[in-house]
Every structure is written in structure tokens, then in C-alpha cells.
Image (cartoon, rainbow, N blue to C red; front, side, top):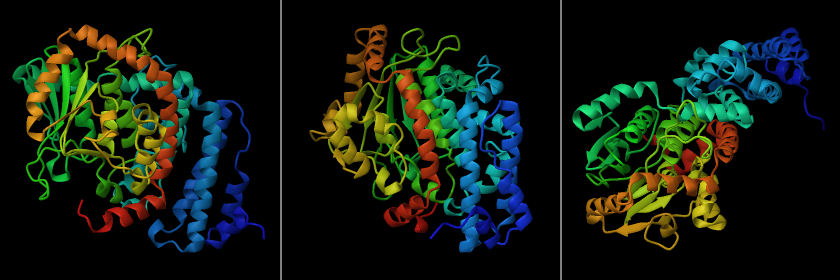
Length: 465
């Protein structure tokens, strides 16, 4: 039995036959020059948006209406991918003045929405879905993922975007001045404290086990910039502060990963994911870039410092991923690590790229695909953690390791970082993985499987945000 055609699906949902026919017949199937395609494809995307808007909102659609929405979204996304496969670099060059201007991803998507109508959602379209639970969204932000992925997949445009995201944020200057004046910096969910020649970056989201969410991302990147650029320190120590949860009250916790309740309630936008990986996590790994030098580990280096992670209690999800970009990991003997991506239905950041070089392919697959728990004080855990200490000895152990890593001078330590990194993960390898991640995470983030996983494994519908 043949599948229903597009027209039948749209008409069955109650959409006007004439409007549906006009839209279906307007689908561009070929590729021409940018200006011609901009007009033809935009007309098709805008027409699809109008048809989708004519349907009831997602929570109250019947089966026919759900089928029509899926058909419209699939057709417009396939057309976006065709357009971007041919024109991603040209669009990027238009938005960045032929790569002479650096634009961060969170601004780039809005510029693209203005430049090519319908290519990515507008601010209003994203805002309209922002207040909805994740299950009630059509996922207009998936198109931001298609755009981001195609830009990153292009060697020139992608390298330039990676460079832009490695630059120090303009809004970090005031924070740096506060640190210089007082020797500490409180950004609410993140604190910086100087301890001799070390600067400690301390996660402070105590209500949520130091989990990350849309309220922590900017502060974390600003703190990372300030810590790296701070002239009065040689090394950065990342820790988690004490938390409020009754089970762990007043205990320090390295971090619980992303806030899953916030995902379920629709409070984590798609861009959070690529911004995190292209932003502060990449800066820990590669340093803060200079505007005049591509941070490719050969022709131009950024400004960087060695990083130490001090793991108390646990490092779950995104916090386990952070350990994979650290120079040295100290862990409490009772701490553990886990990557519960399978139970969440999302991609665990860059762990797929990085974890196998620590623990090997098989253990990496078990950790990512089957949620294998890795006690820090185990043979597998010690492949990630450099040193296991008694929980009460963490502070003195940090001081000892800081002294050991900096005794030979920061120049040698940074040079060794670069030497190790160049054979592990060049900027090009990073960019290519990021292109895949940007696309796959977009579809995962709006998948029905995500909702089912969170309800089944997290009891998300009964948790308070």
C-alpha cells in the first residue's frame, strides 16, 4: 500500500486545498545562485510556517493534524538542508563581512534570520515556544541546529566560528576589574577565589546539586575568561561548592550535569548545547583566542593556563565531560563519574570524541550507551582521575598538586599542554565533531524519546523546576 501523498495529508488535517497545493508545488528542488535561491526557498519556508500556524497548537492536535505538522516540518527542513549544503559559507560570509568580523553563535542565528527569511527561526518564533514544556514544542530551534551544523562543516566558515567563540567575551571586562580590586569574584552561580598563585573557579548552584542550566552558562564562561586572563595566577582549579539537597546537605559536589527538570520543562534552549561546547569548555581545553591568530595549535596560540579538577562526591553528565579537558584530576576516594546520556536521550557533549582516548573504546561505549558507572577509585576511574585522596584531604592535596604543576614555571606547563593537545584533538577535528554534534543534538533535544526517557528514568513530570 502506497504512502499518502503530501496533499492528501494536508487536506486530511483540514488545511485549504488551494493553499496546500500552492505550497507543495512551490517546493524548490534544485540549487542555483544564492540570490535566486534565497527568494525561492524563503517563499517555501514562509509558506510552510503559515500552514503550520493554521493548525492547532501541538498539545491539542489530532492524529491527522499531527501528521500534517510532521509533513510540513520534514519538507521545510529538507529544503533548508539542501540550501545550506550549497550556500552555508556564502551566508556566513555575508553575515561576517567575508570573515573580517567575529560574531558569536547566539548573535549569528538572529542575523541569519534577518538575512534569509525562514532559514532559521526569528526571535519571536523562539520566544513563542520558550514558555512551553519541551513536549509541547514543535522544535523550531532544530533549524538553528541545521544552520550551525552546516556552518561548522565548512572548513573556512567553521574555523572562523570556532575562533569567534574562543575570544574573550566583551562583558567579562567589568568582572575582571572586580577580581583585580578584591581578589575574588562572585557571579552568583560561579565564584572565583585566589589562593596564592592559583585561582579557584567554584560552581555554586546549591539548590540543584551544582547542575548547569540556562542561568549558569554565561556566568561560567565569563568566569572561565577571567580566570584564564588573570595576570596574578598561574593555574586554575575547578571545584563544586556545598549543596542544599537533604541527602548531601553541606557536602561539596563537583556537579550533577545538566538540570534535567529544566530540560523537561522547556527551560533549556537548543543553543545552550553548542554554546557550552564551543564556549567555556573549549576555552578550558584550548585557551582564550587572540583576534589575530587562529587557535590551531601551530600558527597561532591563545592565552591559556593549566587546569586542575577537584572532584568531590560525583561528576555526572556534563561535569564528567569537563574532566576530559582537564590537565590533572584529583578525586575523593568515595566519588564516582557517570554519563547517563542513554537515560536522557541526548548526546553527552564531546565525550564521544574524547572519552575513548582515556578509557578505550569498549569502556567508553559502555559509559555512554549503557551508563556504566565509573567509581573514581577503580581501575577504570583511575584512567580519568590522576590522584585519589581521602575526602577530608582534598584542600591540602590541591595545594600540593598546584605546587607540583607550577614548580617548573607556567611556560613549560602551557607548552606541554599544547604538545599533548596537537596529537589528540586539532582545531579541525574539533570543528568536524562540532558540526555533527550541532545537528544530532538538535534532533535529540526535541525528540519524543527525550520526554519518555525523562519521565521513565527521572520522574520528571513530578519534579519541581
